Length: 228
Image (cartoon, rainbow, N blue to C red):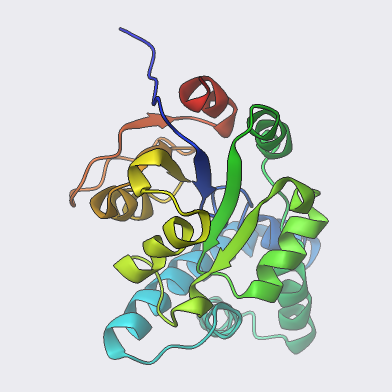
């Protein structure tokens, strides 16, 4: 099988949460307090966080991602009988310090050295994204950090995916969008991007339009796909 290549790419656009930043790392750092419930909490918190973005989009009731993240955490804590205000505040603070996946910084540095423009496109509120990028040491590698707050609606609304094209003055066909969230990858492809799905957890493919151009297990494989 021929190696996957996407020629003509001038910019790489990354989803943040689950793609660059490990969304389970906040709960993992509170293992002493959470015990065996840390992973169920992490999973329910993330699932509810995404669900609330979609529901708010459909309801026309936008709130920034910090509020959505807090609401999702409150639901998860209540569901697992973990309602504890100091714990809640610690977990929210840790969400500003999410750990990047191990290969992220090196991958971005390799792409940058090859002349690639780099951006984040995220549901995250700008201060959340700035904190995560700074704490993970990747802020200086990014040319843009784009938040849905510019359009006041969450992914997968098409207006979100238009933001990088407008910022860089490039057509989506000349940009590679990368996400570990399958639904996000499909939505970006439907908008017109070249898309790589970073399928970190060997998930089954989504049954929605349209299929990404390819998939990888970690971001480390990306420079070999998009570099000339």
